[in-house]
Image: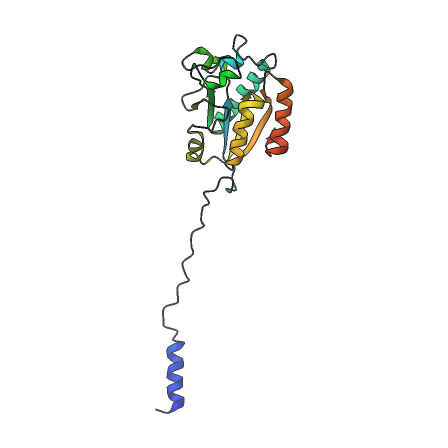
Length: 213
């Protein structure tokens, strides 16, 4: 066999048309990020904060005043909207010990086991809703709120309730620190201190980057 014949045989082996086609390299599946806020689709939850007797009933220890009836109506509307949309509804409720250190600053309120710590009947939770008692301003502090939201793949929180300058503000701050987007329903929050309420709305929007809706 001449050199030319050998070269032709080698070329035939390399370019053999009967050889099975080479399969393309398998494509890696797209990776799903576990970081809050990176999903292209928003998964929202409604947080209904401290709509309990001691804040929302005229006989309550820290009643939020004449703005409360309108806020109750907005909260009811938002709760119904969220349920229709299949969004988780989470109630955060003050639930204090009788000798809670908070009572050095505020009158005793929302004591565990009392009517004052219960959600008002107009906004009663349904069987599918989540109720999380809390002992501090933030609904995240010392509670299962964060893991409850992550288990439901929530990335956006919509807030209603009271008090704007206390539990709403501090819950929103912790939510932002944890990477959640935050929406605050402007007409769905209030406080017994309306000046502080207005200041808190500015803080929520200008400092925390919450969206007022």
